[in-house]
Length: 286
Image (cartoon, rainbow, N blue to C red):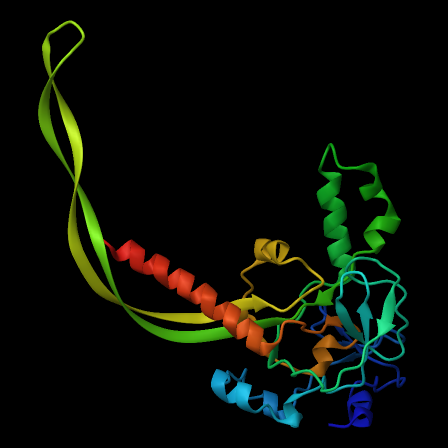
């Protein structure tokens, strides 16, 4: 899809302005005249979210599956290294993640892999700000700066990049299973009297078994702008609500471009799955 076609696609049918995705309406809304335009997904997106074979994807990702399907501009923060993507007409003055003004234009040799799906925003930015105000208003010891309008106005939504992986695994395990047993023994106390006590022992026996498990939508964050531990606090995301990617969902919003590529993400996912698999096998030991 050419940039011209993508730009025309989100024009307001009434005034010709650039329509933006509005969570409250779940539609494209013109910020100038308020006209609501329902989403009209690409024909390729009607069939649902595609799940691709990892090996095939690593071997060859066609050019048609790269890019954002719309005209964009990218900048890279020299402080936190986050790459932000937004509309060409927007002028970025500060990093959306760390607030640094040290932003430089970012150009890639090859266009990024286009997302297969997107989890659209459900709350508008004004509603989020209202909820934050109500939250800190209920806190007796909240810092005073939380109550300033300027602080709340800095809250804004950003689409973050994630990879998801599925895997069907079969594992055979062997282990030494320990079973406690007790014996009674006699001993002489400090007064010279004979006493008895229970003594714990462990009897080890060989054990083995098999395990089949399906890993579904294992998440690997590809963001550099948000620390991974912070993201883990808000996971898991409702991946069953993912929609096939359409540039209309990100129209008017900032998108962070992935900086952990597919190869690195696949390796990380494999390590995480293996750790979970070892834990599941350990839980099977009698």
